[in-house]
Amino acid sequence: MADTVTITDNKTGKKIECPVIEGVYGAPVIDTKTLYKELGMFTFDPGFVTTASCRSKITYLDGEKGILLHRGYPIDQLANQSSYLEVCYLLLYGELPKKSEFDRFRDSLNQRNMVHEHLERFYTGYLHDAHPMSILIGVTGALSSYYHEAMDINDPADRELTALRVIAKMPILAAHCYKHSVGHPFIYSRDDLGYVENFLNMMFSVPMRNFEPNPIAVKALNLMLILHADHEQNASTSTVRLSGSAEANPFACIAAGIVTLWGRAHGGANEAVLKMLAEIETADNIPKFIDRAKDKADPFKLMGFGHRVYKNYDPRATIIRQVCHDLLNEIDTVDQPLFDIAMKLEEIALKDDYFVERKLYPNVDFYSGIILKALGIPTSMYTVMFALARSAGWVAQWMEMMEDPDFKIGRPRQLYMGEQSRDYVPIEKRG
Image 1 (cartoon, one colour):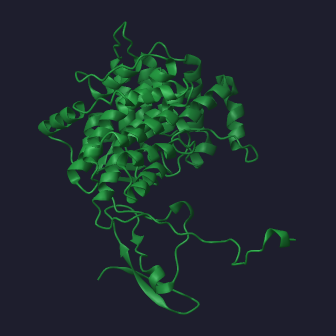
Image 2: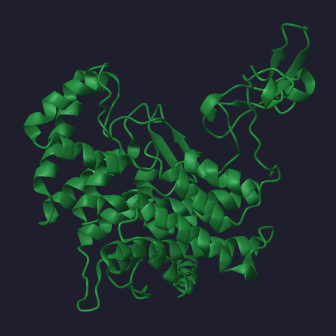
Image 3: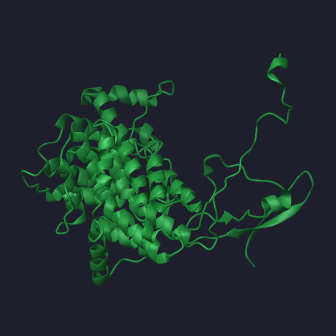
């Protein structure tokens, strides 16, 4: 017999048995679907921090132990041995591809790595200094108006085609956001380049000269994309699922995820790291800012340290740290004073008892911001890069949700704390 938890209404003495469901990993969950029907009650869980909103086979993370798995594969193995496209395949289909499967997957993406020429005119509707995320939200949502022939979300073939289009077109949309901001002509995608090389070419190539990406830069960006590809039921992923539960257009669901990712508390952390480093100005000022971070009366926080979920060292930060250092040693055009501050701050924080005791280790955002800066990607594009990487996870989560036999529209409840029922009083009689 399955384990159950007895919930008792202390007012009436009525009891119900709620099944306890065990997953492969992680804490068991209490199935409370009958709670309202039997006891007339809901649960109260602000931020949904103790609520499992879905079943999923895609990603598992354990914040206490610093574990992150994609389809069962540890993130360090994927980061050190795989490619971003292979991880995309894994997220979508559940298994690592054979070579023939991967070749077909890449060919399928290459067949779809263009956007309608008319869509490119959308960019001209934005000011040159518009935030790239505001542009990306608009053009991603606009994709929903171009693919009417394959929009049956109940058809597995149409869902798969949509996923391929998302992964193939996001680098184009992202690179065009940058090109629009600097007034450069858009560069078309190239089938002869790898996924990361193609993106860098669309970002930095210009008609009068070829762009040759540094292999260390390609490796660093490939790693970053892998580390950001999916991260379980975070705010943006939950937004994609909630939008999808209403049977919204899948491109609109991805745009909704981008909206949420733009939040400073979610995808904007790596941008905030660079702003903080600039505020520190010199390595000599670090002790002063360390003291400010320790002062409870001071609102200042060290950005890029600690994590909402990870209470141990962020496993992604462990992986990306070495690549960050390799890149800084390899690239000659880096803002050296800024990186000196970052490396000194890292050194001090890792030795300071205050941060060690509280497990406030550098997280992936600390290093990713430094890497993007070294690659010549402007700060305003950092969250766009995050969205590019996470789009694979978003569309994989959307596909999984659409295949779930328990699929239903999301409808969180509330604890109403407003006024009791009262009668309308005409305006002339209101005292």
